[in-house]
Length: 631
Image 1 (cartoon, rainbow, N blue to C red):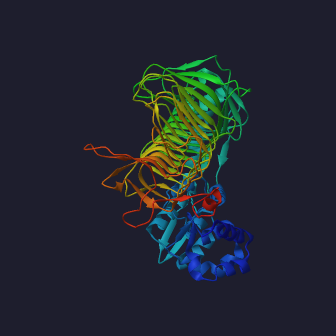
Image 2 (cartoon, rainbow, N blue to C red):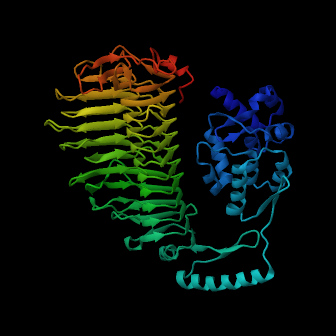
Image 3 (tube, one colour):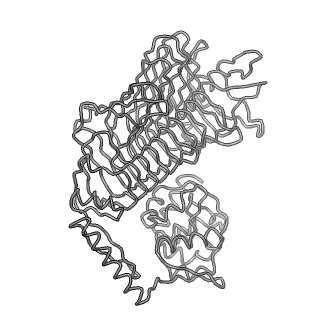
């Protein structure tokens, strides 16, 4: 379905325009469309389209198979305002938010009970309904004779009396511990809880040390001695700001709780801060939830960068914004950075905007515009340094300018717009910032420079992601892998590892040394794997030649054996030019018996479908008119 048609349907539902909706869906088979996770009826419930619901509800309730089209972010954004914690049930790409679940999330209990008997139901829907009511609303539901009953949580007089006594004892403990902070708030249904209202930094630390629920009432300033080892409660910043004097320590060493609605501003920076171990500006490890948090780590004059030295080691040393290691959720978070970071010692050093190592979920996070990360012999990634298997990075944007300079032997400088090394999944991410690598090492070296618009080295899945930032790589003796989407890709040929990804910017690679090779592609520097519906509008400063500049409109290099290319896929389109006429810079024979490389080549056909893997186009408008292109 065309994007314009999709937008038209959403706007029709928002207007509750029954006549136009009926015209759009004159063919009933179109009613099974699902906008990503959102079937049509779920969207109607979300926007309270009463007229459409009245006329189409019964038909839409019975649908059990959906044809997915792209998911508008505006719908998800409106949905999450209602869903709150329930949104965690639907992070999977395979999720469907059924109409019954949408009614439960919107708390339309009467409507849910009325339409339940007409709707398609399965075990997943039943399980999610139970979770929504029991976990997030504290209500019981029952299923009997094809009906659903939503109950209220009722407690006896004896239970109320016992609860009041317990609350009194607990409140005395909290008052003694925290001092002036306090108030007992009551929720609907008779369930009560203590909420610490925090007015001072000492109250804040006391509340956090007790792992209770703390709500800030004004802005605070924390001293370095007020940092925490562990936290498992809840912090609601309530839109306020915490000011912190920076000395290289994590604000919270281990977080398994919830931190939300908070801004953290670092101040009073040393001339240079040395980090002897991995560090972030918020958590060492996060297994909890960090939501709607903004960090400002920059001087008032952004051009005066904060100087950091990280002591590298063989296990890897890391510096990042929100967590060194994340296995929980970091969502709807932003960071402003202006830093100059150098690496000393031997081993690996990495800097990234959001987290260093991720096996959890990073969702809707951004490194803000005007951010700058300049690194000396430290690898740089806009969002994540290493996305581990099982880790998900979704709807994230890097706006920062990322630069690494190196003069070190056996050091392979890496710069990536989103993720340095990916073994997990990346979805709907974008790099806008300029990416730059410079190596001045002058002796012969086995090291290589790596620069990827989205990912440096990829052995995972990348979907719906695009680079629009310019890429510039300059080396003396180091060879280069550079790609608009990924620098070096190696993945199972039977699985699509790049789906609907794109590049739109300038790529410049210069290698001075005679033996320094450049493998440069609009999609990937080196590619082994399967891709579908990808595109490149890359313009190349470096022209193709057969001596060392292996520049291809799609790939700098691929492997082949017995005329079989180690690539697969279809519906991919790239822009060619006079200086880069071919799709592949060089095909390298993957054989130890003999060597015969093929220079300047166009991709062959997919052996299973007969389709050409990548198709060359001569103009930008030709590609933009295709279904694969997106802004």
